[in-house]
Length: 124
Image (tube, rainbow, N blue to C red):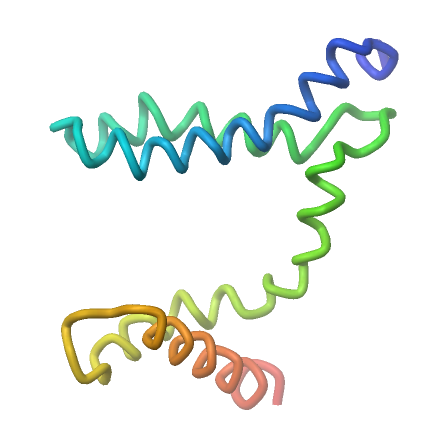
């Protein structure tokens, strides 16, 4: 693997995912609040390159050690079995939620319902 020995390439791979996540936080917190741009333009011009940086940063270079951020992120792999249930149940939970305003309580309720659904329906 030609890139596995390059210190610059390895350093870049270590920095890509954290920079991508930081860029997404800035895009959602600062840019989305202040720029009057259509959603599609925002997705294609700002978010798409940031998502690409995250994917590349987590993938690393073949033949090289995995990036530190990828090792830390792999600790949260247990969440993946609940992601689809959260996706499916979010609208059901929102429809039975007593108000239109959601906060931390709603997300606790949503995750609780998703865990129950996974263990009763998806993995009986």
